[in-house]
Image (tube, rainbow over all chains, first blue to last red; front, side, top):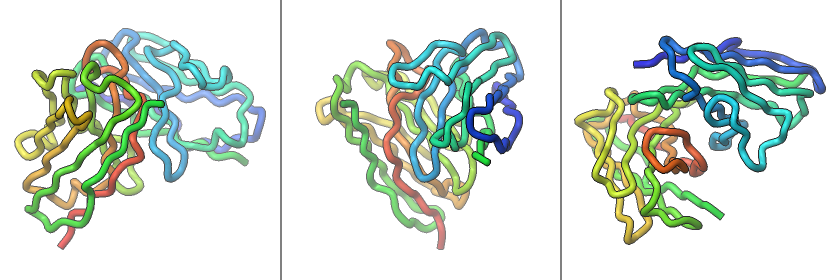
Length: 107
Length: 121
């Protein structure tokens, strides 16, 4: 099973600040990583697919990068509506796995 | 608009069974693989099962293998999860989600609103 380790677990950030969330895979997975945002009491929403591919309707301040084992989700100029928990997910092989999540709080 | 609506959750005794349903609309259901994922209270996301567009290929997490069965009825635009021998650690919100790719086991988009399963005596 491919284990995904996210860091940090929690981040408290002021509006307009830049946020960086990392996801490390236990083995190389190419670009088979996807990022989701889950706001309180809502279902997850896809933000980025295949490490860096943008999704229609998702604000451009959300970007992804990385390949192999190390991946990054960046939120440029954080807005109040971005308070949420962010998850990475790998699709390199079954079983599909998720990272433990990173909770972003707005100061 | 693509829409997924789960139903069938509820309170069940340990060892009991439950059948979840997911009604799909707004897309050609029979051409997409589908998935179940769950989230225990206050915890992260866990993939549960995937099924191909025709139902010919299915995959399960080890934690549910042998107890859960995924199926679909393309004529009814519906996805199902039969859950047997339920345990307390199966408690959580269960989501269905579409795989928008042409294959299986990729990314999830969109997700339904979820249905809560509580396993407790």
